[in-house]
Length: 376
Image 1 (cartoon, helix red, strand yellow):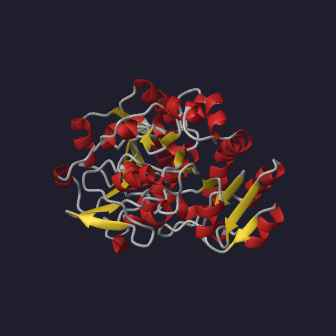
Image 2 (cartoon, rainbow, N blue to C red; image 1 turned 90 degrees about the horizontal axis):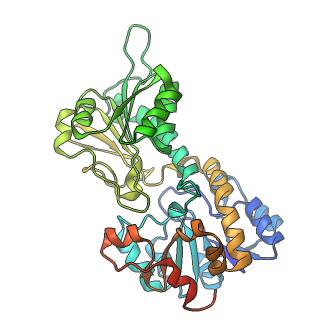
Image 3 (tube, rainbow, N blue to C red; image 1 turned 45 degrees about the horizontal axis):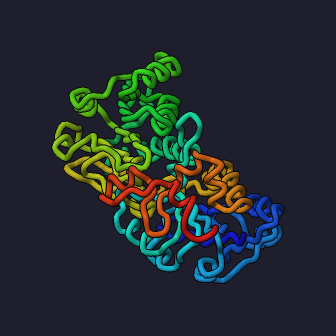
């Protein structure tokens, strides 16, 4: 199989679909790899590193999309990229389709087969290809929130950990999953006053056991959220419904309860955001203000630490890429029901039920893709 790696073109996105080490693994399995020139510069990987790993360096993304059987990316394809996809081609990347009808329509029109990292599951029901980026984003959310709290950036002028004689900042984490846990770890480590909300008794028990007295836990209700955000300096939105649009936990009206200069960091922005006033921002212009509340809603937060993120991502995406290259995507999905859950679009049809429900498409069971259509 010929695998193609285009350079990411989303604003300030420095990650790359495959590291040189991952390329070497694919080449060792007998596959060809084409990498767009400069694709790895954001992680410190020069073209020569890819050549040494066995890749062919090509000049444009158009060549990658024209030649590759499987395109491996990090972020969802931008419009110029979806225009280059073709029927039967395999796209393997993050997609986040539920809040993105435009991208979904373009992928359907392309006829390509699209596997989304974020809906691949594990035997325990976890999301192993999303987890490393959730870990990164959770940790970065506290760094970003701490910066946004500085007066020069529009915040309240509060130091997360405080100092002797001055109370630390109050940090509220909405959601106790991977993002929330990592956010809480960072905030606790900096000495903040941390409360984590969730609706799972098991999650709350696990968090309480881990953090002991270093962080508080609370069952999430609208009333409790309203009470806590009124006291908060920093609120981290860390909720996730796999494949679906994020629920809106804080409305615009709720902003009036908050202290002027308080900060909202919406880590769920890729899935539409969990605050009503959220809209996607970039690393170039990461924040904006609504009713005196600073919003940080960067849609590719891990791209800011591209080297760490790329290597963490490749650790979990490469094994599936190897299987699909070795076996063909159909056989790989037939053998692995958890990888099968990553199939979002096939032959102009939506094969992820959460996406179909969110956007009003007819749902086609992934099994249909495995028994019909053109050969892989």
